[in-house]
Length: 144
Ligand code: FES
Image 1 (tube, rainbow, N blue to C red):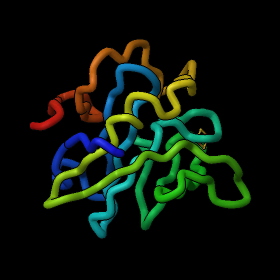
Image 2 (image 1 turned 90 degrees about the vertical axis):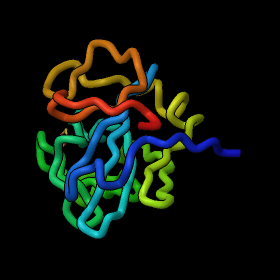
Image 3 (image 1 turned 120 degrees about the horizontal axis):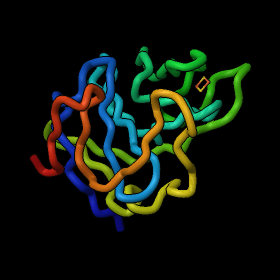
């Protein structure tokens, strides 16, 4: 049975943007919001060469990777043809304007996939589950 962890409010995520959730192990999770207030969660790692999808441009139910402009579906994490490959998706629930992720998935899902070795998505250490703004200027802890 899933244990849902409150991450933030929907309104904490920019429309047509994203926020990242850092994990104790593994690559961050990118949580996206589209212009219909749909919320989606994917591993912050493009299936092409590991680009940071959290820094991509959201449109409809897709995000354009900032590195080579592949289009990745937010609902399934898969590249749109003619490109191929998928990035892991995460369960997300929105209740009363709050965004929840599955605690077990956060702890264990896709932790074997590494961050890219170069480029803007590189991270050298992920030590907390802090909620991190892209520009690193604000941080909002879980449950805030
Ligand atoms: S790394 Fe995303 S399109 Fe190349």
